[in-house]
Image 1 (cartoon, rainbow, N blue to C red):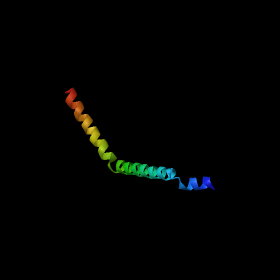
Image 2: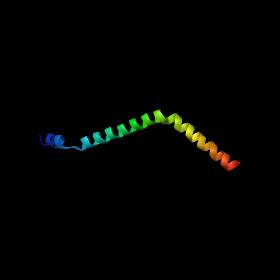
Image 3: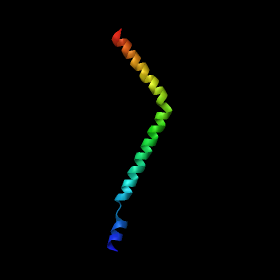
Image 4: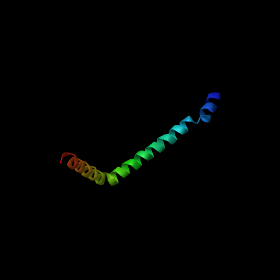
Length: 58
């Protein structure tokens, strides 16, 4: 009975669940932002790369 009371009073598992939910929300937000802005960011990076190459090698 003492072990059961100790198990029920222990809250370390709840903290772990909180962190898992927080990290999952962060990953979901990151994926949503990448999905929404990924193409435009890729073209921006390409433009920056091309302009840097023109500046360095011309």
